[in-house]
Length: 377
Image 1 (cartoon, rainbow, N blue to C red):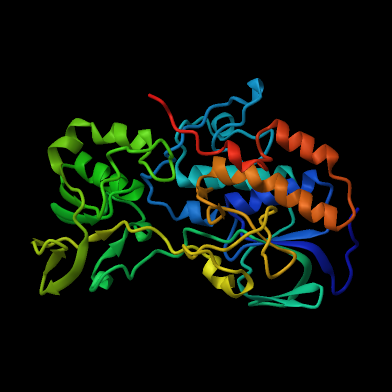
Image 2 (tube, rainbow, N blue to C red; image 1 turned 60 degrees about the horizontal axis):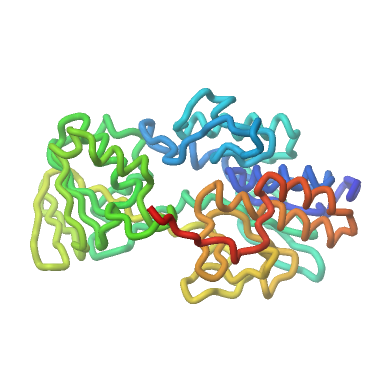
């Protein structure tokens, strides 16, 4: 045991966020032997995945490879495989949310849903966590809040006239025959593919050319899942690509939208332009508790702990170390064991078994010099 409940408890750890990062981090705390912790989520377990368009699927494939000592790429817990549990190679968002809820049940995670965290501040050796209901206190905080609940909407003048793809319940309900999509990374290709399958014309703009792979790093290059779909006959027939053409402005004139490109060209459409420009992430909500890197992401020590607020840890796709980007599940899960060990150590708990167990399953990456190896062919 690492603590006891009381009328006004001080938790050993408060995990803020109940998505893949929050659930995975909480499971690692269980494996470390902690019991006095809580998981807080503004909505419910897997809410970000529940909000995906109905047609959107995981770009990383799931296989039940645990039997050969390799975790399913989309797993966030040792012994769990979305492929096995869901019988799906590329799960939908709703399917994956159900997988996360099942993990929370199996590991009996102490989840408090519908708990909107308003602020986190350090008071002496304890964190004061203000919520919409009642304040909480904890010795440690793991910030794992929804990275994909904050669509980036201010990339250019008139972007408010666009609709972010993250706000679409599905693609089949979109009205119109001629669409403009701004952003050519995964979500841009996803919406373009599904519109093309319905015979809709799509003009897709990107300030770069992400569909031409110059690196094997999946944090930068398009996934093979997306590249394969771009070779689909209907995609080739209905989608026109505009690489290296940034959009600088969108204006609305009556029922027509006028889109201006960086090279001066203008394009018109009656369908509301779709913005696939990514997300701002949630780390900005606690930015004052972290030093900032040059790229705006939180500066972390070797344990993914804040360099200026001891006891505050970061888990999830905002984790950065040097030029290493831990943006996908199979990347950031490699740091769960690191965080769990640091917290358990600070509480005076043994960690040798935890480290050995997590290292065995590729979830204890403490040597970043082994990252970044490119494919030769």
